[in-house]
Amino acid sequence: RGPIAPISKFVLTLLTWTHQYVSNYGVVIILFSCIMKAIYFPLTHRGMRQMKEMQEKQALLQPKLNELKQRYKNNPQKLNQETMRIYREHGVSPVGSLKGCLPMLLQLPIFWALFTVLRNTIELRRAPFILWIRDLSEPDRLHLPFLSDFPFLPDGAIPVLPLIMGAVMLLQQRFTAKGGDPRTKMMGYMMPIIFTFLFIRFPAGLVLYWLVNSVLSLGEQYLMHVQSEGAGRQTDRP
Image 1 (cartoon, rainbow, N blue to C red):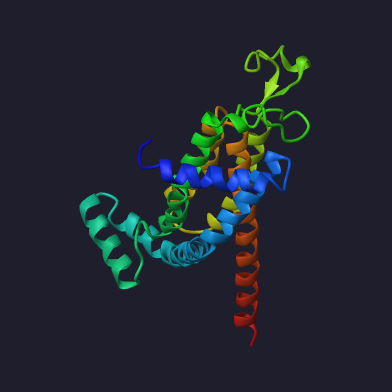
Image 2: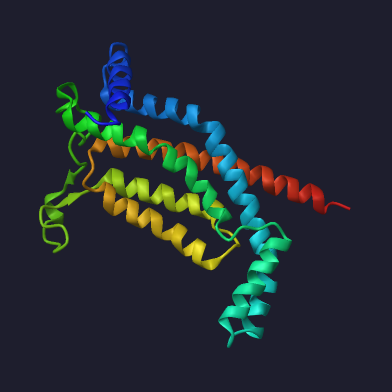
């Protein structure tokens, strides 16, 4: 029911069809994540390039902005006016680096549809993946009894997939948070932490989907970083 119902039906149909050829639903979700990444690739790649270009411009302007902060430290209104003037002159949007978030927002309908499928579909209940992950419709927990003595782990359970996902998202910031506005950088580093705590209670299959998506995005960002570094070295040659 609701506007997400047709998307949920599409997701369920695709998962069950793939399951006819792949017996493990965890592998099915990995393949599904790869397919969605390929579909969204033109949007995500363009968003990443725009975000990187905007951050590079902001990094070049940072010395001028720091000078303005010193000059107008007692006049916030004038500081804001001069800052916006410099942004306009150099074609920089203060929120331009956030354009890279748009592709992620566009994926939310698929994300929510998969969440609905995992919570409500009988076929996916108690569907195992590998090792300790024996139910993709339930939150991921690796139970280690010797950890039960820690006050923050009363049952000795570790959310392994959310922690790995958070680590991958932090690695992504290595390629996206260089230069630019310090507040934007700080927000970028806070997002993986927030996501990790949010995903702890989500079904393991949903975390697996987002983890695969994050790994693919990390690879894409790394290739863009290598290309950018190579282009920079060629430009610096006499």
